[in-house]
Image (cartoon, rainbow, N blue to C red; front, side, top):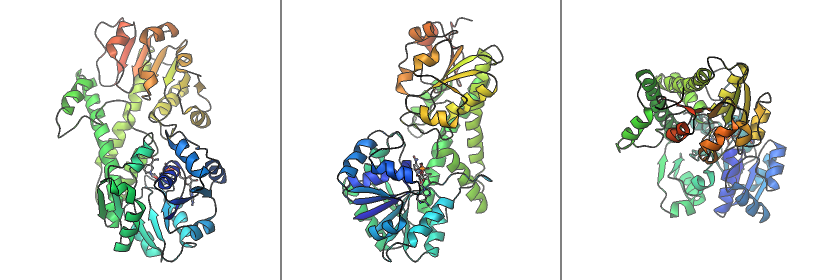
Length: 434
Ligand code: NAD
């Protein structure tokens, strides 16, 4: 089939390359000429494991091309996937639909009358229905559940596909697009527009709630002297609850969960339904960043003015260079404002971090960040940070203080190597040197 993918950011570039991998002829469309040119030259402008190889293979074979021209896209494609951004609005918690509306208007003006316009962006419930009523060309919604860092795997072998369709014809076309994926037994849920849109926002709301739930338990443990690590372990053995997304830490960030739960609560209000608990989920999440700042102050003797702080991590999660709403950089910037000398290191996100936070210091390696530090903050869970040797690390720093903001470092090992070790929701280890 001949497909276009409109908006070639994290979602769209991945979707375009994966659709080519499934055997389709694909044309990616972006309003950003630099992005389109880079992708056309086989360069991925962000970090996503496996994507450069897939992109190089399919751009070289000519099966995958990129353009900025909607006229070319309309003439080329039978099915047009819209993957543009839906950021938070500047003036409210709601989603900014400017890009989605512009992309639908532009492709609808050029698409063949029997084309199918398929939204993949995460949108407030009601958007697909509104767009379907606006244009003569048929609309469908096919929400995306990929995780950055696993985007290729999640697209080619998703745990489910959701088709929001208004006709049997639209379902047939989408089944044809995803035929190789469906042939492997991937579950397909076909739904009306509102349900399909809600599957995505409900999934994100559930995951965010689970993370904030254990982080709220961390707050209680901090107040009561409990250990949230042990609590989570015991809870996770209950298969009604499950162990995943149950690790206390500095919380979630990124370009999706924070803005999606805010937009969901906002949209629910418009519909007369209160999802106020999502605002608590958001508030708990933001409070964990405050807690890391507070622990840093405590370990620095009450104030961070002049302290050298090594921040391990800048991406919002490992496996990605995405720094949108990154907890690590949020904490780093706040400590810098309080007068600390902050040195950040991240294996992949240095360029993005430097652009967004030019006033922070940047190290060339984890060891370089640690050199002379008064405190180390472990804020993005990259495997190389987990693998740091506490004894070697102790020899590099000025003072052996560490806050494990991801709850994965071995407190006993770090303490045995002479570190004052703090993790969220956990008591200070016994046997620590004062
Ligand atoms: P992004 O900001 O990385 O990419 C958006 C792209 O759209 C940019 O390249 C931009 O130049 C382009 N664009 C904007 N307006 C355009 C227009 N009118 N025509 C053509 N291109 C246009 O965003 P993203 O992270 O890829 O997210 C896109 C959507 O997918 C959002 O709704 C997001 O919530 C959703 N989503 C993202 C992920 C993820 O992991 N990133 C996962 C699932 C769903």
